[in-house]
Image 1 (spheres, rainbow, N blue to C red):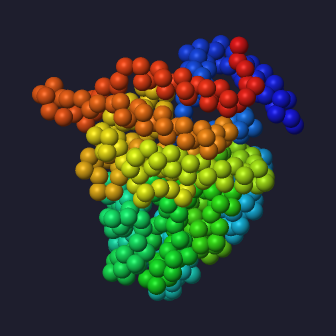
Image 2: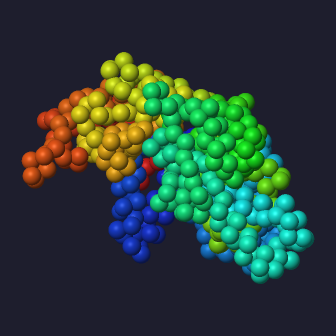
Image 3: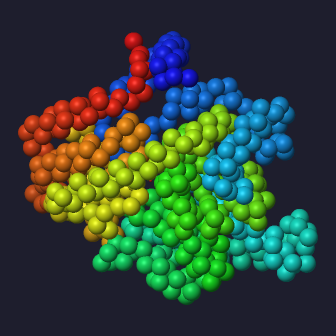
Length: 482
Ligand code: DSN
């Protein structure tokens, strides 16, 4: 179907859908229209966001939403799941083919759900493997109450080693206030204080000393690639299961930008992901695993999850089918190239970047050199129509709330068609905003970490310059709502 045909059909589908919604709750229809206007009119640089295709978006708005389907393909706790079976099987098939995985599980509702499924699968796998033998049982049902008591104690004493939040790891990688930091004894590895880069020798030394059951690799704010072959070597040396959370960079794996040692799928026992970030699908999660771990991951429901979101699984299948097209590889390469252009744009204007640059889709700008906190920078940028999120930098003196960094990502604007020149211009506009933002003071007259003053005319100047680029690369071109 041509782009023009898609635009015409999508315009009429959404126009009519919004009229139906407005007949029940007009304020929701209005907010939905406004969201499109806002997304169209701003520079979306949040590294974890993207724009899904009309096909993906439309797939989510159907009657699959009304069906319960707890269980797994062909083995449901509800009748009438034949069409959900088709959907889930297709999503898993596309995922296996796209990533070259032995097994795929499409049910997790989000990234944290996917990680919980992975954690409990790893624990279940250990119970059902050598531990069953230890108790002389054929399966978990043969375990006595006393066996379970001992097992609970042993399971509750398992260890997890993951990347620290302020080094770029995720909450679910063992951050103490998160459930992952409570269900496991956790330790964290950081990055080199000088270079900001992962030091595999340090990870190895920590792993040898701590002997984790789970070694977690992956990140949500680390602007560099990871060598997963090395992480697997470390996991094998200490008998750990290697779990890679590729939520952020799944699109770069799917698009064959990360191959060989940088592709987690051939190296990890379990890989988790979201589907809505660089992968450009619907909001949701997914788990990939080796055959060895497949039986325990397959019990994600009922072990961790309730009823799968069938309408979202259908949209995952559509998005994964899109990602299997050659055009997705061109897109993924452009995401990485654009991140480099953005980073170079900052460096050539004297800004400071964590690790000194990027080789994935993330740029982490240290805004302390502008005399600002991340919170002040994020707010001033938003005033100028630049949507980012504040983020800790390693050993951040301002903590996780105010922070000293701003995280930027290229997946969304690359989907709109931005290239090298636009991203260089984006760097210039951001530097212009930050150079013209003054930190404020508290009521007591001390330095504030939140308030700020943006110079006169700066926001309008940046919005005008952005509008020129945004108009040249419209979001959902041809989609018109009256
Ligand atoms: N919230 C996601 C992100 O922004 O990276 C991760 O959970």
